[in-house]
Structure formats: structure tokens, C-alpha cells
Image (cartoon, rainbow, N blue to C red; front, side):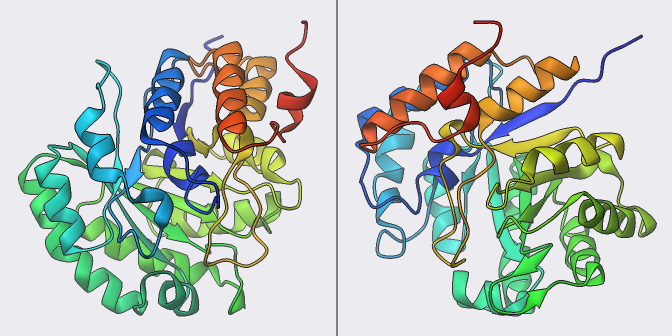
Length: 300
């Protein structure tokens, strides 16, 4: 029987670091990205072309992209929040970008100072230019399961935003449990609504936070429903500065361990991920907080 295969989309260098108070040097970020690629990751979200005043950790984005040595076969997307970010992406000669909106107006307003409608209108020319250049485009739909400002989120709101993004020509939708509130039934509810609208699992990734310890259970539920791309962060770092109470992302090493034990192929080497997780934890002045980071692989 053919074993299933998934893509692991690494968000550690961007989403994992963005809310950290300790500023990591450009050299250390580059070393971290190199270690992630060497471990077999083929998609590594590298940085955010946002104002340094908004996210000080990303102040070195232009310099990082200038120094980045791109490994063949690896995609290095960057987050583009606005027209100025697009200009910087063009100057950096990127070939993959991410856009970010949400299923709730409250979160989008706190995150990028716009309503959902305004954010999508702003993304239209960015997506059009990206398509013209042949770039790969991903879009995050944050707060797809719960919002710190509006509470429970109706799946119809997620579908509405998803449909509008796909009409722009977005290649992939990352459905995001920004607060880490979802359980498997929530995953099934939202994915079923998307499927009912003709949005299949082939264009969906799941972005999970492990705030309440349900991320891996949600992975298993999504696998059963055909999802084959999952976002994660080496070391489990991360959390949105605009989502009070959110904890770290699903740790890449926890995800890889689960997939390995389940016989699901990812092409990612667990020992290499653990080395990268320990490296970035040292740069942040702490220890790896993930379950596999603490316990190690097995058999050891």
C-alpha cells in the first residue's frame, strides 16, 4: 500500500520569531534557515517585509534576503503586507510570497489596520503583479476557528474569504488556528464547509497553534480529510503579537515524529530538525519547549 506523503511548511524564521523580544542576528537567522533546509524542509518562510516599527525582529529583512543562499529545490516565501512590501520583494528577486488576512474584522484591524474588505482590495494589485511575474502565492486566513476580539468564528466567514482569495489567483490557502482553540470536530466543520463550496484539500494547508495541546490531534483529523500540507515551527516558537493568549506554533519536531511513527512520508529528518530547534532556542536564550525537543526521538 502506498504511504501518504505530506508537505511540511516551515514558518520558524518568520512566524516563529516575529513576536520574540530577543532580537536574533541576521547571521544566526541565516544559519537557522540553512539548518532547516539541510534537514530536508523544502518550504521555509523566510521573513516579513513589514515596517521595522511594527515588527522589530524583521528589521533586517532586506539584508537577510540579500545574503540568503537559496538551496536548489527549496522555496523561500516572504510575507508581503502591502505595496511597499511588494516593491521590496521585487528588489530582492523573490519568487514566492504570502499575504495575510483573517476571517474576522477585529483581528485584521488589529493586525494590519484594515477591514477584511480593505485588506482584500489592497491585495488585488499585489496578487496581480505576483501572477504576472510567475510567483507562487500563499494566503493566510487567520482566526479561522476563533478570534481574540470576536470569539467563535462561523465557518461561512472562512469560506467567504477563501473564495475571494482564490479568485485573485492565490495558489494555496493556509487555514489558521491562530489562538490554538480548535479540536478535531472544528477542523472537520471548517474543512467540510470549504469542500462544500468547491474548495478542496489540494489547495489547503493547516496552520496550527498548540496553545491547548490539540494541534497533533487536529493534524490527524485533517489527514483523514485529505489535507496534505501542515505549517509548523522548529522548536515550537511563535505566536501572534496581535492575538493575546496565543502560544507557540505546532513544533516541527513534534509533527515529524508523529508522521514518522504513522508511516507518513515528509522527507524531513527529525535529528536535523532537533538540531535546528536547539540552535534557535540557544539564540533566544532558552531551551526547546516542544515535547519531542525535551524527550528526544525514539528509539534513541
